[in-house]
Image (cartoon, rainbow, N blue to C red; front, side):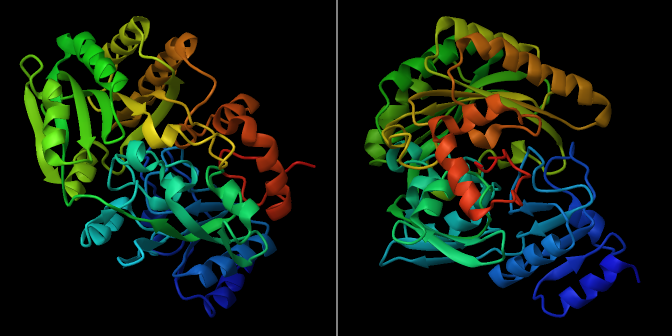
Length: 455
């Protein structure tokens, strides 16, 4: 038995979850993450059952000088949930949601997916801002911002947090809230995984659904310019009840390129019908799947577009306005997409999420505008160069139109320079660095969009 195996054998005696080494039959499957482009080989995978397991795993990693990657439950397209030769602390077995309908709160374990949260909260007619895809992990989405269908009405996911339970770099388990470790609570709401491992979250809930107005309408790609102008017009007068997303996608035949608008309306259904009427009555759509629908179904309608194991490389820019030049640039970029799985997605930021001051939490992107995501996705390794090049070229063409901020959760694994830090954290970076120095002075948690401790 080698030295690490011997240490793991002792470690496993006081570990409730499952510990996997490369010699174990389940290791190869457990090491793989959503993005098939990322192929790393941890020396050890600690599949934790609770915060005590996480604390034990952090201590062992530090004793053995192993780099730590933290895997929640979802996508992590940037590949930061795994590590070559280090320890993967895997929370994906920690899936639990406890709803208190009287208090309108939900306590959610760190490996839970948004679809599971929605299922439990909607049993009580409640919800909080989650992702636009139900297979997204709660932890990663929330710590980096948390855009979702409800963000115009109720803010980002992190704006709905009451508390976060954290395992720190020294193995301590602490609670961060407005009245307890308030500096840490400020920092983790937008600082990503820089400050520790988030073992659970407590969210505020709101009355939503269970039936809402929403869905997707699509037109042929030759209407793309007109569709984006319609999207721009609707966004200019959207109130807090209406969330809008435009997308350029390929149809189910994997050949036909489509331009689409997705929407969710979270006020009275009759008002929702009026709000989406301009979308449903525009031209001759090739698909109209917009109408009264369960909130859980709205949150899951895009899931099949993001299958596990596909190869992904994403780039995004935030633009203040959807000018004619931006419309032309976005459409032209999509028409050059080499893969039928590639997309360009434009998410409208407005309402409650944009009315918070940038210094209220660590999360800095508080402007109204449009997040343009170049989502390159393909199946075969032989298409890696083309898939990556298309995303990078599209990202470059958007540069003259973009503002200074970028959405943290869309930064890929090569966004590591000082410019990426400033774009993600903005004016909050110095304060985040000071708090990092307090809670993780040795930068143990650095496999992220890393905030270096201020010396």
